Amino acid sequence: MKIQLWGLPASGTTIIVRYFHSLPDAFFLTEPLHRIFCHGKDPEAGIEEELGKVKASVVGYKECVHTPDMPWFNLMRKKPDWTTIGMVRDPVTNWGSMLGFGWGTGPGRRVENFLSFAIPFLQTVREHPVIVYERFCEDPAGEVERTSGLKSPKSVTLKLLTDSFGNPEAHRSDSVKVVPPVAIADGDRDAILGSGVMGLYESIRR
Image 1 (cartoon, rainbow, N blue to C red):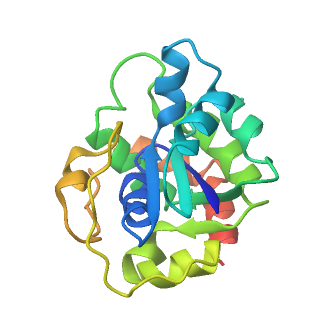
Image 2 (image 1 turned 180 degrees about the horizontal axis):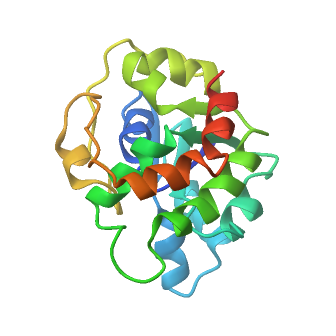
């Protein structure tokens, strides 16, 4: 079985792909397409080559969507031999978590930029099974089985990943836990609540 997990930055994808990676007879990568592309290789062929060398019955990777046109997501998500799974988190806390990683600084990293790719992602990811971050924190095994069909132990010891660009704190944790996001400005909250993205999130959550 081959699984690809797609989500927004700071939506919890690192801790969730670590859970997949820690299941018996499973191997997962974190954001390999960016690394493969930077080495001048075709991302689609590169991921197949890397995972083709792995001796595991369940393999996969995760990537984050951070541009409105979502080129890699649209290229890879409908590949017939892959199980594509989306990842969503409450947009207000998602933006607060991004701020904690420094996304609120520099040109092109304002809340409006976040909404420019969060909205099309949520509109599109509904075509696939979707892990809801808040439900995953409450019941990791149940949420993984619901979206992928994989039955897993109720308690999983999380293993480290290689080639990862995710949250370093998540890599050192040994359990799934909610990390509080940074408080956001009233203007950012108003922009998120007025954009329609919360309605998209709630429709997926339901």
